[in-house]
Length: 492
Ligand SMILES: NC(=O)C1=CN([C@@H]2O[C@H](COP(=O)(O)OP(=O)(O)OC[C@H]3O[C@@H](n4cnc5c(N)ncnc54)[C@H](OP(=O)(O)O)[C@@H]3O)[C@@H](O)[C@H]2O)C=CC1
Ligand SMILES: O=C1O[C@H](COP(=O)(O)O)[C@@H](O)[C@H](O)[C@H]1O
Image (tube, rainbow, N blue to C red; front, side, top):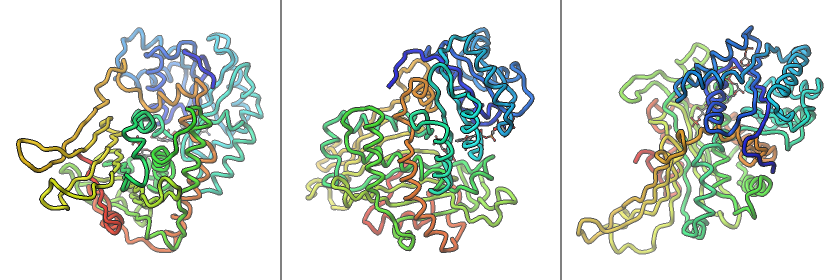
């Protein structure tokens, strides 16, 4: 793995006028700059709009204006940005872009290193990759890397096709498939919590763990992305990538070291061990839902089908819950429950590891009151870890749950905890692909998810089946109840 303290590069952002660039990429580049991680760099914003360098710089400044920097420093930062009008379907655009890259490589002494970030609709990914090769843009004097946004395909066949197109132009080592959950501080901490603590790692198996629950709930609806989302649904949008990646990190064996190859290889083994669900078994393992009208924080909100005219008859799921079984020696018999959806009670991403209870109750009046030990990993908005134990409190002879909590949000990281995108972009500049998904991971998770979607296609769903503001349909609770479990609350 290549390591530099301050990597140098020209970063080309395709889709520079779009939402992702504005909301995530410019602030992340700013934070890298502000934190002294990059100095010799130039960013080329590419899109069709007839913007100028000044328009781009104004937009960049506006997108980071809430972050702490004085006007002079802000202008020094935005002066690294250049705009190149580009239509990715036109050959001439790539020639123009190449000239500007070469010019900036000289001006900023970036050693010929190039990052191409595809922040555009996925139908363009293959085309851009091929054109970068055909027009010589990937042949700089230094290294070249291609960052690809989600979604990586719509199912396994389309993902394979996309991969084929990209691989015809770039080597696997040059491809950085973004899953922004892998850049989150507490998702990265899963491995550390597991592998740096004997307390947990010795117990991390089916003898001591009863079940693991991963919830990523959102209170927002589909906002401006209805067209994309309706074609995708919660399962493709969240489960195939972010949720499966978290399961893999929780379930993987300790790698022999922390290199990209070893970490990925252990995650791949987990994905291979996931029990494949036959389409006619889908209801035993997975539940889907779509929100109807409801109330969130005292405010009435519309149902999914009322969000826009196009959604009136939609059967797209806005919620998915599932039970994933990992058929290997460590995890046989331990369900990993996942659930995610839009318009749920609150925005929260949390992992609850429920340990098996002790065999005999000495301290609780009723066995049912006995509280299992829980390890809760708070991914967002709180970042931290909470361990639920039992102890005697206030002179009373019986035990009660107590909690040991560590909150990561308040630690000093210079200017707050780095954003997921900041970390991932920096990793990419360093050539560290550990927190990006390898093609084998993408393929295995699509193959798992495709079977579920195939099962659902056979039956008309009874939507809407949960009111906005709830934690999904009743069937999601029933899924755990039949195993003798229940969802732990996502609040405190
Ligand atoms: N927005 C988000 O929160 C998230 C987005 N993503 C992914 O990021 C990617 C981008 O999403 P988002 O920013 O929301 O999309 P937008 O629709 O906001 O932006 C699309 C961009 O593509 C440019 N574009 C479109 N056609 C062409 C063309 N022929 N040639 C050159 N540029 C073109 C547009 O610029 P112009 O019109 O000026 O040409 C615009 O800059 C998608 O893959 C999405 O799935 C992933 C996670 C979250
Ligand atoms: O990838 C996506 O993630 C977001 C949720 O991300 P988070 O970091 O806010 O938890 C989700 O809203 C979006 O639909 C999906 O495409």
